[in-house]
Image (cartoon, rainbow, N blue to C red; front, side, top):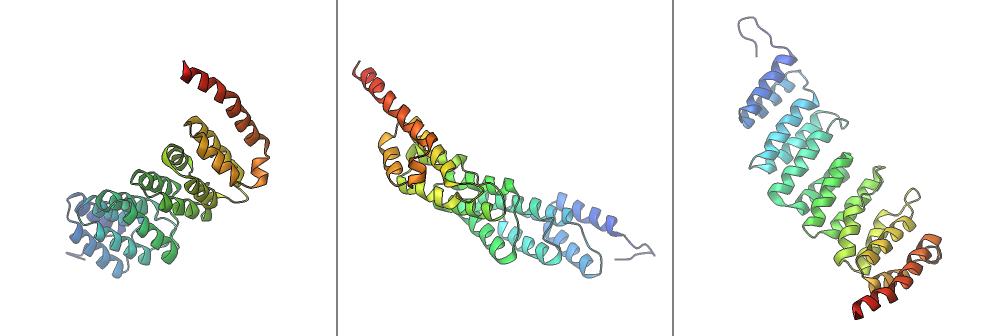
Length: 239
């Protein structure tokens, strides 16, 4: 890597890798990057992230996965959020939400990778969009284990429109903790079911909820108002 007495420093190497990435020469950039690191220079996470990002945007997203694994092995686990977010986005676009979820779940369980909160939210949205509600619940559990508040809004919206009581209970089980009690989720679900006019489902959910939820003032208020509104709605329907 020295020619004519000139020894490039880390900044020179970084510029070279970035230029190759921008030109689309990803294999060349990858080989150059690995060779330079093997010679003793260490690149910052920005350079590896750039390479993962470029692979993620291309056709060979599997190469992005292997590159991310290599990035993990060669660097610490503290500055990988940007690369991981681009990887998950690329996987979703090329292989769908379920495959992106599988890769993320494996990275968390096998490598103890900690995604950004925005990565979790992105994946929850995409899983629900493609009909993978149970997988979305698993992501909520992963969020909880990383100390993030579970991103329940898109789940509640989907469940209230077309979900079942079992779906609602699945959301409760996936998100409840001391910091985020189940009552909060139940109240949101009750409110959303009532708003969608799904009174039979909301009654079923109430019957399967614990007594502490059934007797809570906020919950009783929701059902008291629902009972008052039902005769009015019936009268309007009859003309």
